Length: 316
Ligand code: SF4
Ligand code: SF4
Image (tube, rainbow, N blue to C red; front, side, top):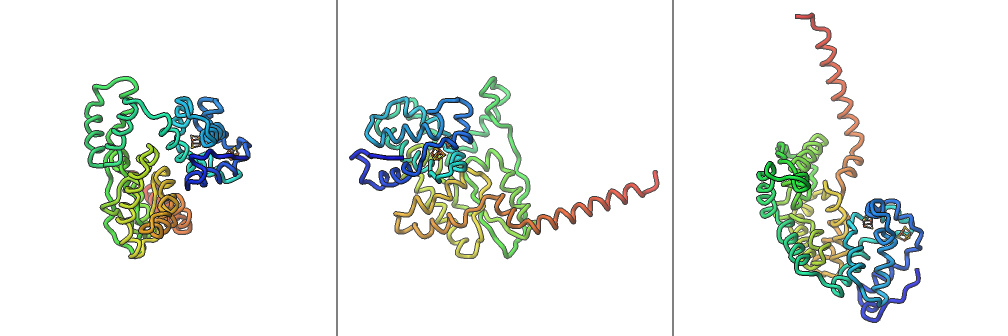
């Protein structure tokens, strides 16, 4: 795609990055096939290609409008479109740049600003999110309609294995997940324990930074990233093999740490190392497939033997 970026942005690091991304896009529209908002709304401006076009216009000097902001806001930042783009367009990076410029130009009303501040003040902080969620869950029987449907039922945590193996991996605890789905990481720890891997929770780590970063508070998001790196680093130096993700959105963010902190001399190398160590749990399991097969095989044999024993007992 040909570009002609406006003076206000073209010689900035953001402008150069946006231009390089825009130039890769060939308008083919393959990405629309995997975009949930386009599938749901059927509007080209709610597709990745349409949003890229809107951002290009703004970066080339056309004034952003509330409509531009609305179509960018509707993007879920799921980055599903990147998986089907044959040209390797880094849509997620472009969106971060586009959103910050559109927000600067269009601004936000008091209600939207308060809502966004409230989200940033609560969600990334497990100690604030957990009691508020609990309160909502206690009030669930009194709620009705959509509010009741959106309030998740209470989930109880299952045990975390106590064993210690020489192979170790870190897990991102995250911010909302421990309250909403406390079993996810515990179940992951039990599966990895069976594979001879200890899963470590680093006490000081928390939100991956995506909530703030995608709500256009980039500096705040970068601080969460630095805090996680500081919490993980002693374990990485001690030999942790991977930083395991059980929430794909967080994984996508951690994969970007190296890129986003590349200009921070104190963290650039560590961030790149953390991104290289980031593994989705499905990747970890796939890499251990021989052990998984052997475990499944032995538990099938045990199960079959117990069935045979039971069926060969004389009736009481
Ligand atoms: S990030 Fe997700 S919602 Fe946004 S354009 Fe890409 S596929 Fe669509
Ligand atoms: S698939 Fe990639 S190259 Fe094609 S329109 Fe979408 S972003 Fe552009």
